[in-house]
Amino acid sequence: MNGPLSRDPIAQAREEWVSHGWEAQADAMAAITAVLRSAAIFLQRAEGILKPHGLSFARFEVLALLGFSSRGSLPMSHASRLLQVHATSLTNSVDRLEAKDLVRRVAHPSDGRTRLLEITSAGRTLLEQARADLNEQLFSDSKLSAEDSRQLFEILARLRRSSGDFL
Amino acid sequence: MNGPLSRDPIAQAREEWVSHGWEAQADAMAAITAVLRSAAIFLQRAEGILKPHGLSFARFEVLALLGFSSRGSLPMSHASRLLQVHATSLTNSVDRLEAKDLVRRVAHPSDGRTRLLEITSAGRTLLEQARADLNEQLFSDSKLSAEDSRQLFEILARLRRSSGDFL
DNA sequence: CTTCAAACCTTGGATGTCCAAGTATATTGT
DNA sequence: ACAATATACTTGGACATCCAAGGTTTGAAG
Image (cartoon, rainbow over all chains, first blue to last red; front, side, top):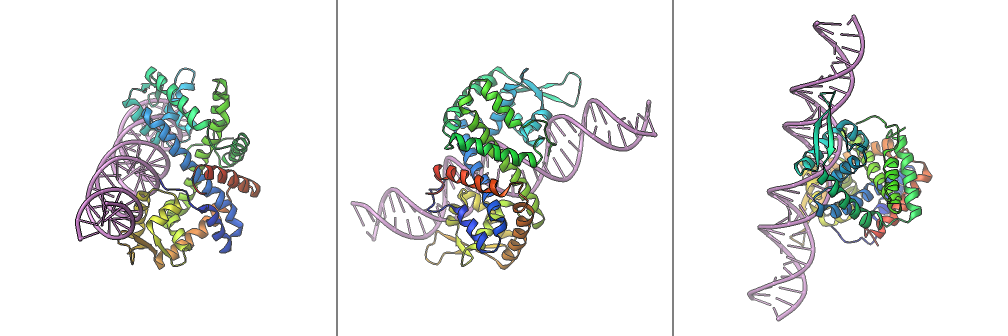
């Protein structure tokens, strides 16, 4: 999108924070801004890898979740909780997945409110190809050392836990 | 949006990765997914804090950048590079900021292509209030220990550097 | 000086995310 | 039973982000 800068813009912002007297918040500001920026980087790379498959990362996550579930189906409410996105975001993703016959909405046998999501065989096929690509092109070459990956996960797990993501 | 889960869904996905034979990629997958999820958490909190001020986080960042610049003005292309967003995203943010008289687009004195962004005095006032709130409510209580903040920033700085964010 | 490529910005379109509201179905409490 | 409440999903609207394409202005090359 834009070439590399000569200085880290977040480090620069951190200095401004310090020089304006907000030193106590400078480290947290820098860390949080870095998380946001890093997420944008990963997301862009993932989207680039998935685009040839006609998938977005959000839709890939839905497929992957269904692929792991034992029956290959689960209620939308359940999926939305596991993926930690708003129900409306899931509705949006499922609309697009269903239009491509990668998933199906089926009626719940006993609860009329609930719709079960079911991955189709075309969905499974595409999932395997997309996952292979992500594993090769993103998760194998993530620019993170093994040690950094583990530390990053642990720090963020503490954060997510104290933010109410899980118990 | 949804209550806490009984298990960390990312840890769960990591186990699936391992049990399906993608152990080599499991840690990176978990770390990257955690970054994406954490970014969503921070972004939501920031938006909640800024909403009463009529600002989004993206627009806050534009205001903050202009507030730091010595003259309070700089070219859009420069701002877009520093904020590391696409030029079109900045156009969008500036349209909304300008509609509220928080910034102005002014002609560049010598280059007819370039538009200078200039923060207004109303923009400065709002920026100070919004920043005070973010400092108090987000950056002071970020659920990250001081040590975690520093480590997180450093790990992500390595990542961003090797991803071409800066030299 | 004329032409053509590069740089800057905007417009239009596709996606994704959230919130507020609305519809339908289930469950609870009296 | 019936009314009130809760849960599940969808719809419509506000924003954000990107890409592809188009208009304007510069600047460089011939």
